Length: 355
Image (cartoon, rainbow, N blue to C red; front, side, top):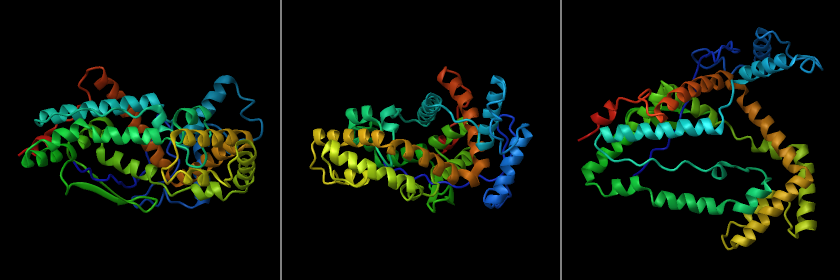
């Protein structure tokens, strides 16, 4: 079965999250979120001030608060940045419920469906600029074993085998029930220039709508926050990165015997596929150890965090919307996972697609 690529657009407008006051304007044309830097600064100050805190806080202000006061300050700061981030366990709970709802919807449409396995914690780790986890490197090298595992899982997907075994008319009906109508979509150009298209009908869309309450709104939010402009150059062009990557290169040469100027060169050396698993693991471990001993790991972590925050500055309202939708989805997901019916999509779009 072919899956359409899901690309999405920007959710516009201000939204309140968990009692937080919206901090930036959001006109219907999105101009509020694309405001100039000076206007964003004013909005951020206004947000913290509404919580009763100065912004910027004077040196020692936070330290002088009571324990409860510091907790409230940190929560206010989180709200003004876009609300709290859901934990990995909470996101897995939402994902599990989504697959449960897809399965229910497909069965109502007359088809079988098997929930795919959730990605492991190891598979979710990303090291775009330098591998800095020695334990992960010892277990997975650069992750080629995980790539092979994902590829094998795709090849052995019971849903694909099931659909391929159906008569052609039923296979088309299966695709329509699962993925929806090709001409009913949300389409937009994302912040990084990608053209984002996602169908709004079918069991997948119905499951998301059942959890998030508004599948179009969730689609727009994810389009923005998952397709921000690339921030790699902001990391690798910085003076701090260039300083520490030189120290990393010296470590790789003197401590491990590798002549690489950057982590990218180390990884590119494996592109031919000729390296054994042992060679891959040895190189990955050396990269991770030198990343930590040279200070590059700490520098990269700080630069990545700073670059991400900068890229999200124009989209504070979108961050708040994502938090609001995710928290609502989490409540519904818990009901679904506990065996309840809350958030179950009706499946009428899937039924309408049957031949």
